[in-house]
Image (cartoon, rainbow, N blue to C red; front, side):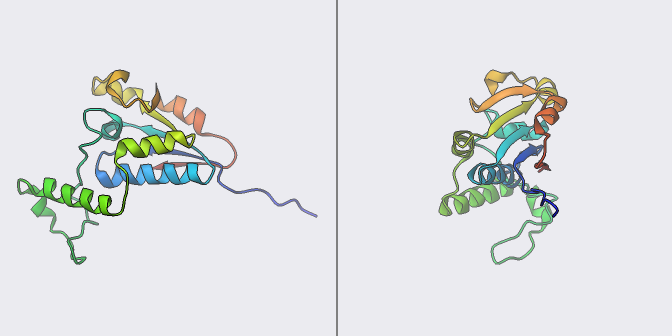
Length: 167
């Protein structure tokens, strides 16, 4: 009799490289879902994704209005991407998105990071991006465990039942 191999995901390593609300929240939702399912979750913020864990920007994220083919207006109509160039439109769309998230009781970034780390998830920042943007660890959320190279993060991400997700 052949032994059935366990193919269940046991660990996720999520890389967040963008700072739009929709990209950051996709990362946070997936990481939180993983810890809630009992999986090991490691999240690596790189390039503009660092804004999600930088104290100065983490609570001021915006929606990408220009060049976002999935953007919809109320009623489901496609959002004309050129409207995003008009002053104030991006801020208005971002405020509307935050309002809808509040109505759904979706926590702000800092609370989401609390939930992820309380569940055993780990938050990391990219050394290269930190150097490029001249940031120091003190500039980051207290949830950040360490600043790593991508190689160091990949070494932590391996193992049977592991998945790497890039958002």
